[in-house]
Structure formats: structure tokens, C-alpha cells
Amino acid sequence: MANSRRRVLQLLEIWEHSNRHAQDLLGAEFERAKLPGKERALMQHLLFGILRQRRLLDHWIDHLRAGKGKGKGGLDDDARRLLQLGLFQLFHTRVPDHAAVNETLRLATPRTKGLINALLRRATRERSSLERMAAEAPAAIRFSLPDFLHDKWLAQFGEDAVEKLGCWCQEPAPNYLRRNDLRPEAAALLKDHGLRPAEAVGQREDFFQVDAIPQSILDAGAGYIQDPATVLACDLLGVKSGHLVLDACAAPGGKTAYLAQLMGNEGKLVATDSLESRLVRLRDNLDRLGATRVQVRSCDWKEANPDLGFFDRILLDVPCSNTGVLRRRVDLRWRLSSGVFAEMASLQVKLAGNILRQLRPGGRAVYSTCSIEPEENEQVVEHLLAEDPSLECRETVSSLPHRDGFDGAYAALLVKKTSTLGNRRSESSSQ
Image 1 (spheres, helix red, strand yellow):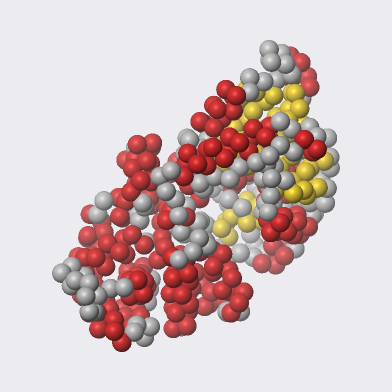
Image 2 (tube, rainbow, N blue to C red):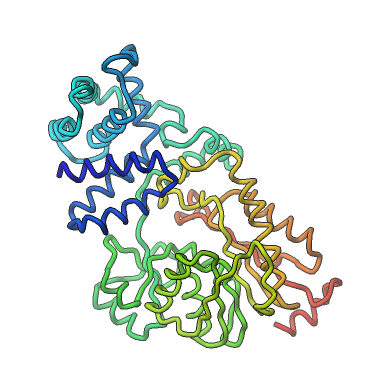
């Protein structure tokens, strides 16, 4: 499978010189090359694994190269990527040592082949030493985290939690499938495939952990790949069939379809997003899942959209840093910077302020993210409450990976008072 390894190197190069995400690059390559399942699995394992272990791999490379200089026979970007590929195979796959070295060397240029051969063979001889070096390295290196993120989490959660978070970030994410009860045949279809509810998801019977994604179930709209943490915000919103509901940042549509299910496919549910490409995906998913009563609209919530009218319930699942889903978006940690949280918070306040203008008195809104950072969660909610005295926060729920074992998520239930004095009796009767 030399071609698979060559493709991985090419994708790594594109990733390093663009802002494209690894998942998107891999999906486009699968579509272009029409690869068989075995080759796809290998490519995904190698690409995601190298990005997940990137800092540790470079730590080993720098150690193995100590004293070799950067002149003739030195290490350029192509050679470093090749060494990352070789070392990942040696230490994180079941590929035999000789095969990992030889398959890597087949992709080397004549100029760097000797150096790469020497370093990889040294790594095989010093396996125990390198593994001990990894175990004794600082946590930011062991878990391949940027220093700023490690230090932030250390101050935020403490050392024990950072160890657990780091381990969680390095684990391949399990696949959870939510049964879509908008399709009456869903329960029988999942049972026919031998699926059983995931024991780890509390008392819920609509989530299933699957090793391989059952494409026939997805094609039939009987299920949707979705982490259990993603529905916390929807459950907190408390929608009913008679409500007018807005899902303001709806694509790709998993939460929208779940809201439609909670509403029994009745009432009025408006789903908005700002990019046409995202709206196309949103419509496709809703059609497949049988969410027939959803009105899809193009809205850029950086501006107010009063023409939509007022709503009883609003879900504000705003763009965020995604630090709660780093194990799924393995390359994201390398796209973040120390200033991103303040930047996202500024955008979130702006979006939420405009969206909340559409909430009627007595109505409920849920502000949610898949971030585990207080700047994007509690602090944004505090800002919104300070700006609008007609709002009050009734409840918050969260999922922390190191505590709960699922993706990170945050949701805050905001209620718009029927008057600025907050007449709780009239508010309760209006709901």
C-alpha cells in the first residue's frame, strides 16, 4: 500500500500549506480516488494518527538528529513528514519494523534516503529509550498539545484533569449513532442490524455505539452519527409541537432534526445558516432524516433579521473554538492560537445579541457551544445578561470529556422576562 502512504504525505503537505481541515482533505481524496475500504482505513489511521501525535513525533526526530546539523543531508519539510510517517508506523501501528522502515524508504528521495534510513533504524534499536523519553516528557509533548493550550487547561482544570484531557485527546473518537424516530421503521432496522443502546449513555435508549458506521442505516435516514453531548442543548430548550422554534446556526442539521423529532414533526421550525454550501448539506440531511416541517433560510446573524418574526424557543448553537471535540477534529489543536478564545467570544456575543432579538417575552433560548472554555461559555452568558436586563439564566448544563467521557459541550437556558421587572407569575403562565 505504498500509494496510500504517498497520498498521506501529499495530504500532510497540503494541510501544512493551507487552512483546510484534515477530515475535509481526506474525504475529498476518497471521493477523487474511489479507494477501497481497506486503503481508506489505513490512510485515515496514518493521517489522523500523525496529526494527533505530531509534537511527540517531532520531539523524537529532534532527539534522533541531535548533532547532525542542517547542511547537506539535513532535514527539509518533506523529509520531516516522511520521518513522522515512519516513526508513527514503528510506534503506533502493528506494522512490523522492517516493513515500516522499508515502506517509508520507498518514498524517500536519493538525497535524504540515507539519513532517513539511519534515523529510522536507530529508532528501532532504541525503542525502549524513546518510549521512556515519551513517558517522561512534559505533558504538552506527551499529549502533543500546544504550550498555550496546555498551560490554559492546567490553570483552568488542574493537573489531574489535564492528564485525563490529554489522554482523551489522543484517543480515536468512538462513533455514536442516534436513532432517528422521525422514521417509524428506525427501531426495527437498528434491531435487525444487531445494534443495542450504548450502556455509557445513562438511561437513554436512542444512542448506539458502533465500531463501523452502518451506511445502510444512514442512507435510510434511520440514524445519524452524533455524540450524546450534542443533544444536551436541545433537551434543555424544552420544545413542544405548538411552538415556533428557531435553530439559528443549524448546519449540518443533526440538532435540527432532533428538535423536529421532539416536536413530532409539527409546529413551525425555522433553520438558518449563512453559507450556501452549509445550507445544501443541511437540506440534504433534513430530507434524508424525514424532518418535513423545517423551513430552511439563509441568514447571516452578524446582522439582525427582524423579518423572521418572534419565536417561542431559540437554539443558539454558535461557532466556537471546538476545544470540546479535539479528539474528533485531530488537527484543530494546530489551528488554534492563544487569542482565538477572545476572538470567538466577541463573535458569539454579536451573534447571540442579534439572535435573541427574535425571542418573544416569556420565551426560552439556549446558548450552546462545543467549547470547554469559560471565555466562550459562562463569560459570554454573563455579558449577554449584563447587556439585556430582560434576560435571566435559569439553568446550565455541561459535558467535560475528562469528567463525563463524552465530547465537551455547554448549554445555558435563557428566559426572556415578560417585563423588565421580571414578573415570574405571568412568565410561567405564558410558557
